[in-house]
Length: 496
Image 1 (cartoon, helix red, strand yellow):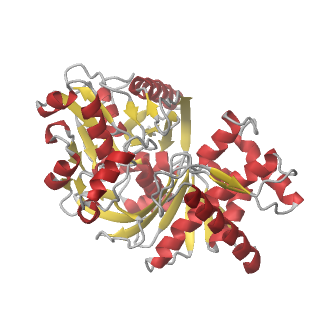
Image 2 (tube, helix red, strand yellow):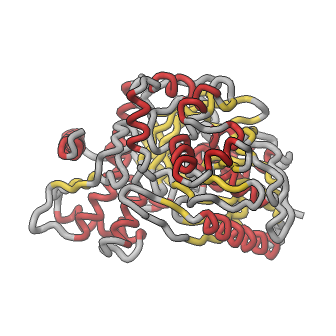
């Protein structure tokens, strides 16, 4: 009997589950969006119960679909939005506060105060990260400091911390397993890249009690069995969403690179078995850890990518759905270049700027500017931000010649052509664009012995379309000069 592997993909705006057969073909899928909470300026929260209920519902739907298709589920892998922070009661499983989302900026002042103490180099050398509200550590401290009695309960071992993967594992196993994997642990600012363990110095810097932390396991490992789903299944793989996408894109050799376009944009470059530290504010991270061996990566993080299209759809009502963005961008392009630039710094700027104070701005508006121009500027802003990441890599001595792309935005051919034109490298889109889910599902198949390893996973990758640069060099230079000026004005306007 042929069997399938379930990927639980818990993201920033929705929870999904996808079933894949052994050849990497999707055979079932379910998705549910959930409410975003914005209690204050720059704050972003989720109700943890929404994360759990939508995950449970979609997983059960896909388990049923796989059974109906004659390929019953055999194992589960979990991939998740990273850095998002949840603390719950060990006895009841009830969160003591909403999940603080990776986009949240409430700890800006806390991070700024920490930087004044001179700990920036320590965090960079140990964790490979910058000191920024993006990461989990300052979020943990904020919850412990703002929920009555939380710090004392945490120090007494009565509370548990987890990123979303850990919270889901806890509930899926009925509270039996409190664990995470290396790719999620390394995004907390509490993980030592060289020892692959929680670091005492980092715990002291961020005032996080060790008693609340989960056990760190390999990305392919035994994470228990699901007690809370309609079928008991082994959980055999866990990866942060961006690392899962790199695995799904078969980025297993040093120098291979992928760029994912979801809510945010994240570029990951495989650097092999040693951590490489950027001199231009890229992040050093774990790519995956299998059989006790760590593969490292350099990462560039953009906070707002697909979220631009959601903003245009939900807040400005300029598009009915994100699928219309390519058509509207083409409509704008036929008018010519209006010189409209959108800097979508809705929650600050990520790499390579790491400017938590920046806020969104638009430049070049005229009386002739219409909705199509806004949409085009939104798509272009994601490309320009990607270029900023690649420029930082170039300054670090890394010159990619091609990039594999995935995520919802990559279904837009206009967007990908503009991307290849601005980056001036080849862009490759795979046949299966759900690489985040694919990566963790196939890693689970490897862990239970149904795939032999990375060679099998590499053979599963197939190209759908290749994009090559066509824009004139002078046109590219003109457009980039306008973007650089827009970024400079945005940061100058805010006194950065």
